[in-house]
Structure formats: C-alpha cells, structure tokens
Length: 141
Image 1: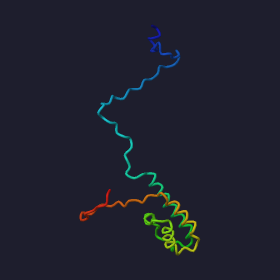
Image 2: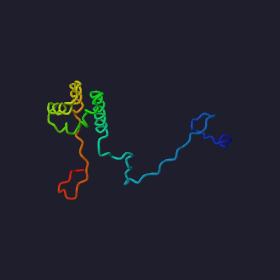
Image 3: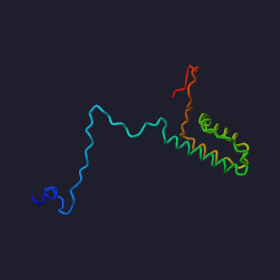
Image 4: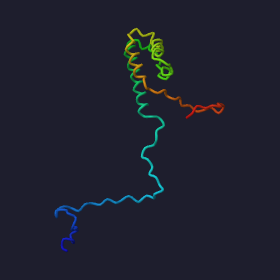
C-alpha cells in the first residue's frame, strides 16, 4: 500500500523510477448519422494540370526571351496555348507557330519541336465568364 500512496500504479509493467503514462482525452463519440467533413475543399480544376500549364507558359516566355534577345520589340505579344490546342494536327500547330515567329532571326525549329511535345496531353482551358442575361445558351460552368 505504501507504493500506491506516491501515485504509482501496480500491474502496469513500468519500472519504479519512470513516471506513469499520460492518457490523452478521447474525442467525443460521433452520432452514426453524421459524416465527418473532409479536411480539403474540392477544387474545380485539377491542380496538377494547372501547374503543368503554368510551367509550359513560363517555359514559352523564357525561350522567347532567348530567341529574341536584343530584339525584344519584335517579340510576339503572346503564344496562345489554347489556340494551338484547338488545331487538329502538329503540322497545323507548327505552321501557326512559324507564322507567329516569322520576325525571329534565330533558329526556331527546336523551340517549335519542344513546344509541340509539351502540348501533348495538355487540356484546353475552359474560358470562365459570366453568362449575359440576354444569352439563351450560356457556357457551362
């Protein structure tokens, strides 16, 4: 009994010099009808696809700066990825890119080939816009 007065519990298998194990409070029991809410909110757009698209856009910007170094005024305003993705074949995409890059005096073949490779499997981004009240067929959200 003397051992119990100092707060040690018998039968727990602990060594006499160690402090007793700390018990953590148990969470309250849930009612079976309630579902636990997920920790993350569902994202409408696939984060991986968006990141891949952003990486491609940044790659394009970097390569255009290399191709037009010293002639930034001749650089095209943009290379629209969605316009390229709307085209059916890589040949059509390559022709469109050659037209966009016609003012470039550097060799653009490697850039075009690499960009066409990066575009494979990249989904077209849906345009998000508010439907106008007069539009009988608003775009799906």
